[in-house]
Length: 229
Image (cartoon, rainbow, N blue to C red):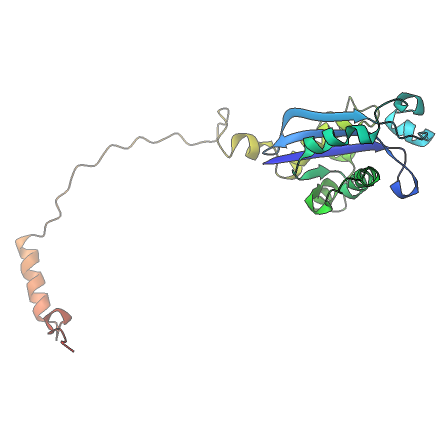
């Protein structure tokens, strides 16, 4: 089963007021585990990056200027994700921005029905608890030391680990329920010796007792004449 973990960095919070995507990061999962295949690109939004957005992502107007336009990367991006389900943290946000970019270049939108929102998963599993990516990484002891700034690919890689924990953790995926060789709570296998054959034929006394018992039965079904009608 192939899935794509997706994250974006943007110039703001709302594509409807002109904000754009400035980075896309994707991680491929097969059977919920990262394969090592990724897609990442910086994008020139054709506008400035506000200071508050740059403070979060570290991506400034000067840095993204001259990077590829979304139109130049659309084919490669769509080829990478294919028809696989998309995993995103606050999927409505990321999918909204991606679909706005796709619309501007005349491409078909991605269906939100094909997305899994890890914020929703986290809130169902831990009601009332913080559901940010940082909070979930800390809950699952996932190393955050490299996350000085938000980055789409780094966040997608972290989210792939969070997603695995949210759907049940590593043991079901890696061990498929098999026992770890280091476990000490397993009972040793008992070696049983085969039993010798035991005769089960009735004795003469048992056969005679059986015949006496049968004679006591009234109108037994095996003595009835079959109907010819």
